[in-house]
Length: 233
Image (spheres, rainbow, N blue to C red):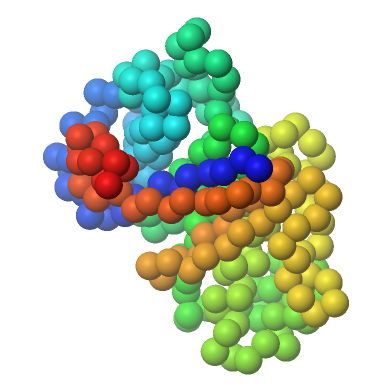
């Protein structure tokens, strides 16, 4: 069975100087898109998402960070361009929420990842009635109050991750129901899901093939050297 790695970075911990130093790694097309974002936080998420993606692929494939090119595609996920010597192009998925960036990579199976900040102040029952099916909404409303926020965001992020997985495969993006018999489903035809709660966020990873293992690595600092040391720890 294939495996995957999830790389996590809190962009809120990086200074403006840290981020400016990383701009040199972006292509002209990426810089143009970066400058179109009006909100500084969204700019930062985009920049670090592209940098973490390069780093994740470099670590997975054992190639130089600088040898990886990213091609922007309007309305679609970016495309990787690797050196001709690479035997395959890995699968990846990106997500961000409130300054956190998550990147999943696998050499063996398509992926979809989503990260969502847990917000205990929101009326999750009302949100579920508008965003989920009746069966899914009823499942959430039947849970104890102390479990509802985390359960809502776990299901929400799983739906988002599954949507990315299905749409990246070029298939019709009709999501299956993720609750049956009063339980959350963790797999279905052509998909498998894993979910975690970490640092006040819900994280979901969906894959086409069942994964033998998923490693989660949080990155600290803003230099490739620091990240490489953490990856090798």
